[in-house]
Image 1 (cartoon, rainbow, N blue to C red):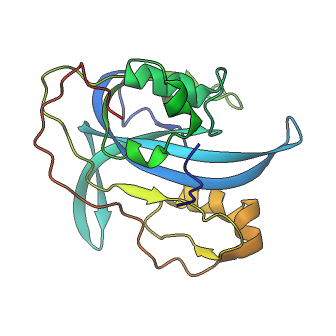
Image 2: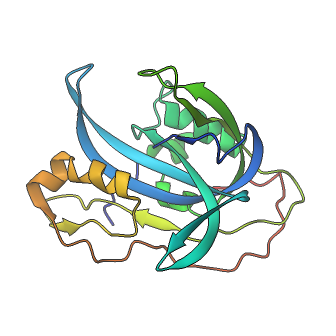
Length: 216
């Protein structure tokens, strides 16, 4: 089966103090192809996101107060070349490098639900140093022996290959939807109607993490 997933990143600091957190991968979102103005080259972009249950955020929805885990994400150019940042982060997360067989065709969809530890660091904006953001500094294996956590709102979205038309789900965060609307693929074959689901299957997880296991 063909898949575009076989191969922002910032949040306000008042919501996420610096530190190391147990997290779970909650989304893999295909943002489409965009022109990189620095290199005048088209590049595919993928967002990989993580829920941090330890840091809850409260907001109003439909007139009610709702609490959900804070979500942080990194944006990548997909690929497993040695210098690719996605490969570096995945290797750190896995705790070992890819085999030749794995790197020939690695399916990003298997990341959904995988646990890890992420380090949050505060960094100034490159455009405005007065603005400080909480970024993902590193991703490593989840701690041994702790209960495995599950994603509350797993989202899996990929833009279909070929010329098939597609819709952008309303469940995807607004800024990511706008990014997808700007993609080459959406301009060619996207459909404006967004009332379609993007959640992966939910599943209760009662496992205990064994650090000898590769998470994906």
